[in-house]
Image 1: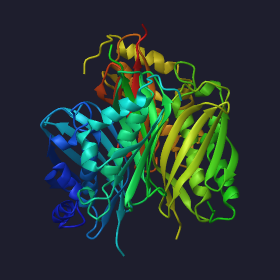
Image 2: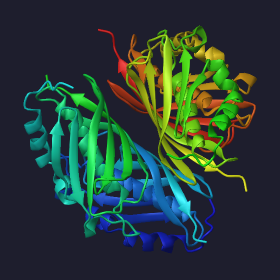
Image 3: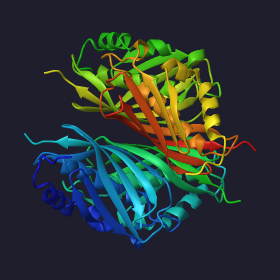
Image 4: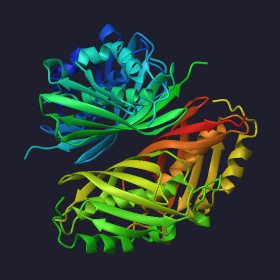
Length: 140
Length: 140
Length: 140
Length: 140
């Protein structure tokens, strides 16, 4: 996939740095390619649900950002991306120390971009899978 | 809907208190009825996305807990609830000071319970709508 | 909800009449209001899955049309509606003789309209619930 | 993925033959492997929506069967599969003469199996993507 914005990586990093919620969750971007963004985070005490695993909402939030930035990486310069909707299946408990969420564009459009996201623990097993619709807003 | 567990409200509150992620997000339970749980939270600096609104993942996480506890309120004593999957539509930007997420059981089953969740800002406009499937695990 | 198109009901009926798949499924429109459309259909031999119940895809197809036409009822004259995505939970087996699918607009927008749909058997129990995103295309 | 049922392919074909709705839609199974089933169908006059394309519900119904049978291919002998829920994104209009829907198991479980489905036109472009949850019922 060809990026329309030659500075797509810088655009993604700058926008991500403004997401205070990613700082709260401990997320860091580890890869930005045209149509693909990867965010990693680790287990820590403030992210748990009642059984001591990481809350489903944490991986979901990170997957949402990964998918949104995957969409942004293919959008024109100056465009904004907003989440229209997503769906996530949780396949296994979020056991592990490090987690990696990748967002991948399935179809980039002028108004809507569809992405899928995969959450993996310690680089191996698939923990969750997202399918997301992003809205592309171009300032005019 | 009739609760099978006479101590359903205490069960929900105790489990919620163990979710450290809800503390991180600032969520507090404001209502527990058979088949319905409401959680509120406020705007704060660590929850934002790049435009200064609350990140979509925050409301999603709170809605997930509200739906999960709505399912737990109708489950037998000793049961555990795990999220199988959910889908959320974001209808409006999360503008406001206080947000209220309600989870409501659509159909309670022995193995699966289906819920819907609504997120509202300042008691009025609908910001997001969730449809969720919860797994009921009974220890034997 | 106020319709922008004064002829919304006629517009919906005309478009529905061109959906040959609705004829194949035996669907007929029974109500068109601003933001709400209801379609009914009956049990017949060509719609079944392996256990003799109506295939999940039948109710889904009817719910999709009901949601799409609910969105169209609030769109400007000349607009087209396309399904972006939907999600359906199946709560009970599709037992019954007559089925009623209602689509209801949750939020009407200029580009996207979000709807929910409910499928009921013989006017009573909820069989399936849909949450759908529709794209509004205005010819210019 | 290893099938538990040595006669998985025969089981899938027998069950599919009982789905009268697949006959109505013109669907035929073209591949059955452990964890993967492919169903093809063609354009015909009774499957259309208002713009002359194939109705979104047709591909959805075929994808649902493909995912359900992918789940069945990994289930124990005698098990039944029911659709819990699915979500579909429609990426492109269903233009073409022949369509191919493949269902693939992401995670097979004792009670729930999660699948994804892809719908392609004339063997090339991705038209729709499904993420589905199937319930596995074992007679006891």
